[in-house]
Length: 340
Image (cartoon, rainbow, N blue to C red; front, side):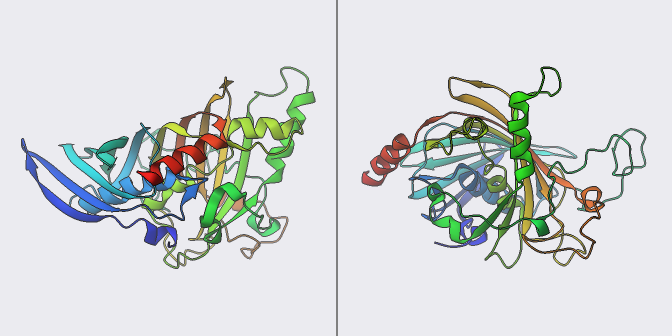
């Protein structure tokens, strides 16, 4: 039971080579605080895999995660785990690895990861033509969150977030929810459909700030499409479980160093949009952005100064396929795993 940075602490238990490929095994125990209902949070579980691969890549030329593709085969449990890693190929710019999470002899999560070297948070654009869209470019996409963190306030998290509610704070960007409702009555052809959400998330007890291994958590905490649809229609909160089946995560840059002027190292902005919903199965596209400050705090700019939006950087993008099932199934699967 610990803050996220401490809850992501796999330990090396074995390493070697097989058929010329380097292999590593890490192990640990799933922290019981980082659950949704009775099942470990998918982003937290993926963070265990990223943390393990980052450790085995620490002494190589490709230290940074660039891309992760994860298939969640079965629900994980609040129990011991093993992460089995194999380095498939190492090239001049990238290394390819597989990393699988195993519990009770069963593979629960399969991943393929690409490692390389991420540019610094404030890296200058490439000097080569058409290799960047910098903030000064007319086609640059600014942060999609509308409200500055200083004008937001922390809101109580739903009970389904379990005990990790004591480690994080969340402030909703209500302007995006309002936009969802306006689409219901807007004339056809005046918008592109879909449902959006956005929020600022702040880590309260991670004194060292947010690390790359924590990014899968932030990429898996947005509101799911069925919940946003229910709210847009005025039907309130749906007590459902939205298990992730497939997830991709691309890291865009390093996270801001501690004490970077005008940027928080404990808070990130999370934006998502869902476009299609069929019998509960839905897609989600998400972006994770730097934040100009912590929730309820200013950054030295005047309240009407919108320049902060151009100063923020997208640090990761994500995509998901998820399901919508009754929360009772979450509880029953969690209880079943606990009895094994």
